[in-house]
Image (cartoon, rainbow, N blue to C red; front, side, top):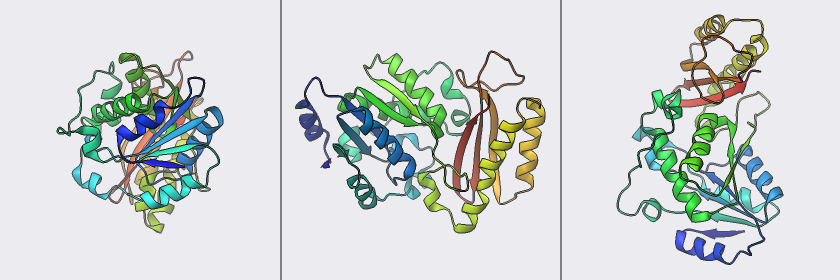
Amino acid sequence: MVIHSQKETLVQALSSVAKNEKIGFVPTMGALHGGHISLVKKALGENDIVVVSIFVNPTQFNNTADLAKYPRTPEEDISLLKNLNGAVIVFLPEVSDLYDDSVSAKKYNFGGLENEMEGKHRKGHFDGVGTIVSKLLRIVKPNTAYFGEKDFQQLQIVKKLVAIEKLPVKIVGCPILRGKSGLAMSSRNKRLSAKQFKEATIIYKTLKEVRDKFRSTSITDLNALVAERFLQNPNLNLEYFEIANEETLKTAKRKNKASKYRAFIAAFAGEVRLIDNMPLN
């Protein structure tokens, strides 16, 4: 494993990669967990070299307190990556290396994808995501980049970004990895107390109940069911629940047999914001 902290040295190292060798890329914000490692393992299985970036991107946070409290565990992250078999390059840049003098996000039009769900509650978030992903893809120039489906809206945004900017990279979405309780693996889980961790499993249980009842129950009734489940669990504050079209991310009011749907939840356990989703049909 090799570590680079500056984009110039990383670019120089990648320039010596043979033309017939494939480069995989897994962008992360660190605080790595099993979900991240599953992405890296998939990338290693499909590429000759895998670059893993660890960078907490300031422009995608609309809450400065959230940015300050975001878990940062670089030593643990490097230790996890060292245990993997294969050619792994870790990119650990500083903010100044990626943003130069202006720490600001480019404005994007993602065809409306950016205005749904997370976009409604985190203004400017996807401008920050688009800005940093574009920068990283242009630095690494991978053949394939891997993103987890836990951030499904982000995955769709990244696919749109690649199409808009005509970047020669394949974007691969990878399934959500869950713990024994069903709770989706997330860097933010590190901030949960043992009690909050146990309580947060209602997110998975509720999504699973919605999936099981989707075929026989109206969307209106499913919305009411979710609201009731969270009223029964007052230590979790539901920010939103949406059943949306997978392709457009538009909120569904009624079902269409030709469409694929996914349920999305964002909820707070104390100050910790958790998101999850699940395909329904």
